[in-house]
Length: 172
Image (cartoon, rainbow, N blue to C red; front, side):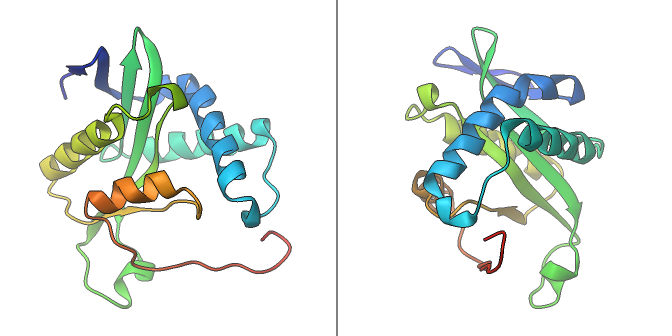
């Protein structure tokens, strides 16, 4: 994928070597989740959150079908998306027909200072193009209840609710 430049922000393909550069933005999202979804339970500390998330990124990106997109402005990462490509498991295929291979947008975020300029749409355009090149048509994304801006963006892009997860217990 070539770098796409718009408004001084370039979107480029990243890799395992770029994961450490995502920590600050991940923690911004982690704090945003805690602010918009306090009903979700007690959130873990920053170090624990990043340790788990960065390990997940390394695991997901080890699959060559999965990918990381970086949005950079002046060399600084101002947004990113991690997309995991995987075989559809029984949780997807026990009720409706889906392709054998699906994608999940595991994380997509734009820094608070870069929001409102269409960068989320640009990232989604690049995700769509990369998945189209792989022949993948089924894309899943999850979000925290209360993250209304993200929900509006995804719905404008054709995403619809498919299932709802409710929780009860000590962690909820």
